[in-house]
Length: 278
Image (tube, rainbow, N blue to C red):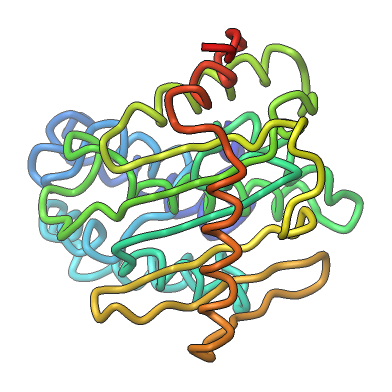
């Protein structure tokens, strides 16, 4: 969806300015994508405000347009206001992570949500969130997902693609988020993502009953050095567990959850709505 009014936010303004500069110089989106070494879908998302532009892209676009750093300076402001301060650490750690382990009982993990599903989930925060804040939150979520995308949908100089291991409760598959159509698309998206070599999705069936996490979502993010942090979020705040012994406790809980879940092949069947008896 994105922003219809270029003046509604810095993110929307960036998209409008990018489109204006591109059209002024007579360059198509395809040509800009080629000259910046970014995917066409990514350039289009930057123009519509459905993804937050990167510093690297902005520098390359400035060179193409000869705008002497205008987009780069605008991008810095966009990045500052689009990501909430308490969430910025999470985004930065994700970009550097070699492995991400996530458990969620109530909904699909943010890294695996479609745009419509994400918008519906974020919108549940109204009236505390304005329409502008909702769109910014969705843009952040879609931008985060770039780290998992294959090479033809990410910058050519991306250094690595992290491994994602996601565990979900079966109830999250049955909870209707938005509409039956949105859920159908979300389940199809999960099924497609589950077949990527760097992504594993396991489902804990309802028949397992109560598990060791008691439905509390958490993420374990590991970086190149091998060190890990645990990210926890609730309604009003987020927190990070960095103590090695406490991180080890969450790792053990994740292993127990993994043992309670169906293997990836049977999980895929459940996601698709097929029988899991065999």
